[in-house]
Amino acid sequence: MKTKTALITGSTSGIGLAIAHTLAEAGAKVGLHGLMAESEGSALALEFERRYGTKATFSNADLRCATAVGELVDYTKQALGGVDILVNNAGIQYTSRVETFPEQKWDDIIAINLSSAFHTIRAALPFMKNRGWGRIVNIASVHGLVASVNKAAYVTAKHGIVGLTKAVALENVEQGITCNAICPGWVDTPLIAAQIEQYAQQHQLDLQAARHQLITDKQPMPVMTPASSIGQWVLFLCSEFAQTTTGAALPIDGGWTAQ
Ligand code: NAD
Image 1 (cartoon, protein in one colour):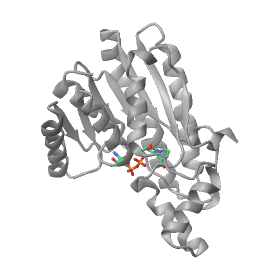
Image 2 (tube, helix red, strand yellow):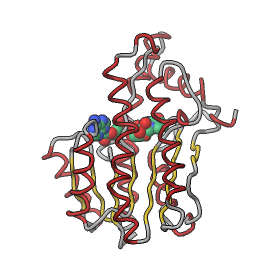
Image 3 (cartoon, rainbow, N blue to C red):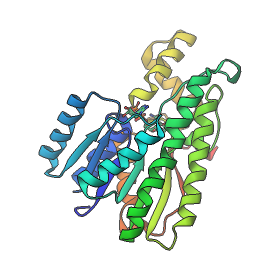
Image 4 (cartoon, rainbow, N blue to C red):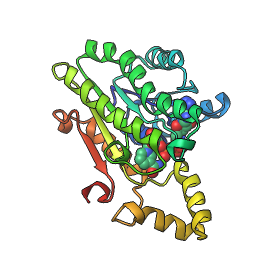
């Protein structure tokens, strides 16, 4: 990884932060990104540089804006010398039945969880093609493969990103570029905290019991995947062992989609 540069969207928290740690530990230069104050983000980048002896940058571009997404890729290319590895990870969640789903939430989820990946890939591909090497990893979800109630926008965006993954993979089979999607079940991050609280209130459970029940409602294996495991999957997809793995949607889901 020592010659590689990675841009990981949404890497100030949860899965993205874990992926950034894994890639930086393996020697890659990392472009950190997420909704965080400039001062806090710069401090995080400095912490990465000190800890891993690699170069790190930070951007808080808002992925709801297509222009900002293009600028994020350009900034990373300029500051770090390229984008060899692109991890589209940033995402948000909102739960409601379709008929009460706020239009703005729909637009935001489609923009952040789906369209931003189109914009980053579009901006990063010319560099990867020039180098004859590239790795694109889209963090989708089991909801890219199956649906659940109350998650119409999320399920739509995640199915979309699995489709985008396949299209980009096929367009680049002769370029040394792979594009894959990782489809996690439950991963212990701030994204699901609100869902656990909501479930606890609805079913009058304490948070521990709500957490267990929420997991096992869908996922046969009653444990959440650690965010660090997703980091290791990304690292594997960036390795030479995975050079023919492309267009895949890999479920890391405790058996959720095996049912
Ligand atoms: P998280 O809430 O911990 O992190 C989300 C990241 O996205 C943060 O860095 C945040 O700043 C960034 N972000 C949010 N809105 C943004 C915006 N408008 N512009 C720029 N950045 C923005 O979430 P997480 O659980 O680590 O989720 C990461 C990805 O993994 C998401 O795509 C999510 O859908 C997916 N995922 C999560 C789980 C899970 O159980 N946690 C399961 C399957 C898939």
